[in-house]
Length: 149
Image 1 (cartoon, one colour):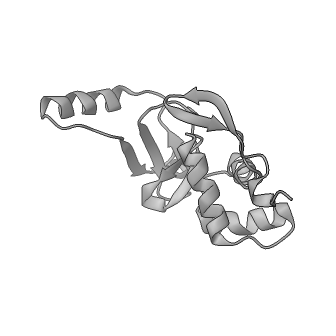
Image 2 (cartoon, rainbow, N blue to C red):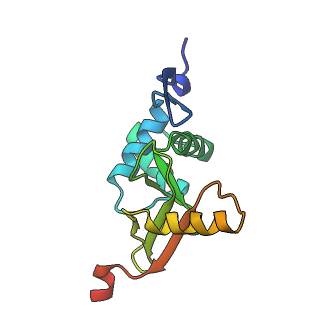
């Protein structure tokens, strides 16, 4: 008998940017749906009660952390380091650097649509002989709504 945990997790034959792409399991799909409905980034502990309500039974923290890890590996979510929270990726399954503008008042996080700053930093790093693996930049300030209030 197949366990609930492994349902729908077969690896697909396709590859995307060097990563094996697989169908999302039920836990990953639940977390992705929760993040899609969220107004801003959510921590694993924010997700736990929402997921428990969605699936109709208690959910343990490792279940959510594993789902988030798999979603991140697939390039579907990004971790907001300063908030220890996650947000759906604006460019799913694409290799790219992330620049977030985060409102210090309401917590909204917006991924920058342009990669000019990222290219500038990579150019500077190359000139310094430094190899960048990944950039996650966070700019903290006030969003338009909070600044107007």
